[in-house]
Amino acid sequence: VFSRCFDAKTSNKSVSKFGLFFADNKNGSWGNIKEFEYNDRDANTIEPAFNKDASVLYFSSDRANGFGGYDLYVSRYQNGNWTAPVNLGPRINTSENEFYPFFHSTGRLYFSSAGHDNKSGGYDLFYSELYKGIWINPIKLPPPFNSGSNDYTYFVDDDFQNGFFTSSKRGSKDIYTFTSTIPNFEICQQQQIDNYCFVFFEENTVELDT
Image 1 (cartoon, one colour):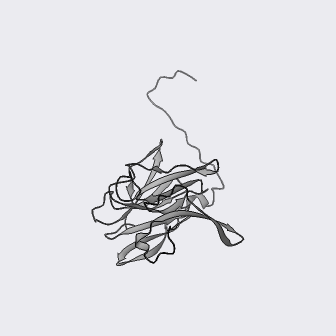
Image 2 (cartoon, helix red, strand yellow):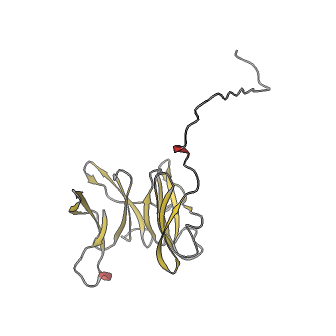
Image 3 (tube, rainbow, N blue to C red):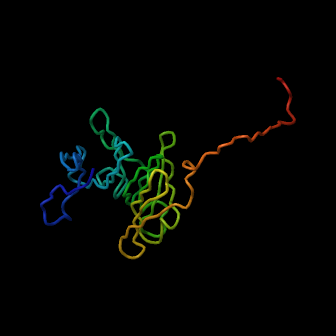
């Protein structure tokens, strides 16, 4: 899935709106390009991101009836079709712009916002996740992911060991890579001998059973 100008032949891209398109890769070649049926010709629909099995699509759009600027939306693939996009609501979207969604396998939705807890006036990186069907208040990523400059497009692998993000901390927009120094305990060698035994005593209670 990718975003592209509706009018690809125009010499003035600034007046052309963008939409989402799908393509299939068969034998190393891209083809079968189809337009997202919920594109809005009067608005921009950009920066798509799938979940892991490509059954959920997140994107950013400045279409009407949002909370202001660009908002994040979600559409789900059900019964062979995409559902009508749903705005992620005021927990995620603000009167400013929300861009660059990335959905992690743990259920976290990472994005860049100019409206959440942002004292620098630029874009910062945040994440949220669903709890009982409601997005929690976005959590701001710590330095060095966020800086006094604009920070965008956070990506990390399933184990939180390696990733990328974009920042303008040096003036231009540059891509940075990072590697975690925290061990991934899920891939550590398991304990071979399990002979630890603990006995717990509960005091000051009435013995009602044996």
